[in-house]
Length: 249
Image 1: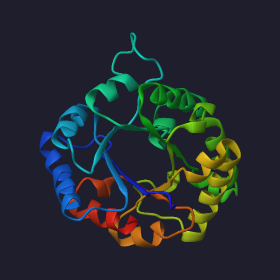
Image 2: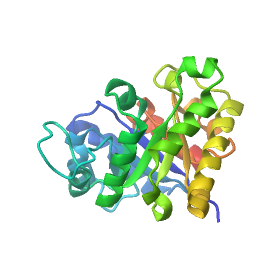
Image 3: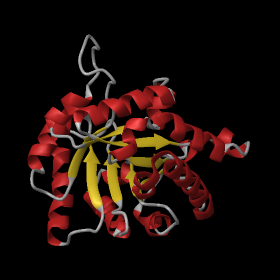
Image 4: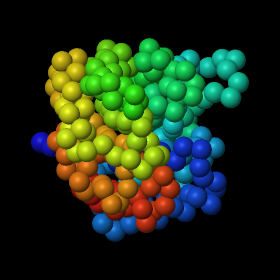
């Protein structure tokens, strides 16, 4: 049976209470015409509880954008996986390049957060990707495969999760890898997942992220081993997000 695609919107540090109307518009459209894809939106932490309440019973899940590895403690400004779950989240993005680069997160840090997500009952979406310098040096496959290896703890052997390939140089730049480049990386990710997790690794969706928009969604989502999309700016408006969801199924 084919793996169900996952399309998740990452709102990053965008959105106020009024923005929830865009999420409600997505949910209303999917209620009229359900998609074969699983759909989620990951708003800023300030909107998670409000969005989860407004989308209760809808065909759109709500997720967080990061979490702390610890369950609780003196970590001013941070948020735990348990707090995300309590607010109504069902999944969480971890290891995004903006966290790895801007906050110095290592793959080992990401793995600890993945364990926290599983502990709290959240589905992790684990992000990996190479820089432009690494790609031009011919290291893309090795870098991404290493991130997958080191960011995924053994606890995922029988748990639902997703991996998102986001080439750092494509995020927010308008640049997109060619389909063969995407397929090469996704196939290398799949090889690691199958070796590490067997059947669960074979069934885990591998999302593509990095300047995904309505104009290129169909081509990208038809590529080999692409099992959905992690969408940035195009997920902020229902009129842009919905065509990407439809392209996935």
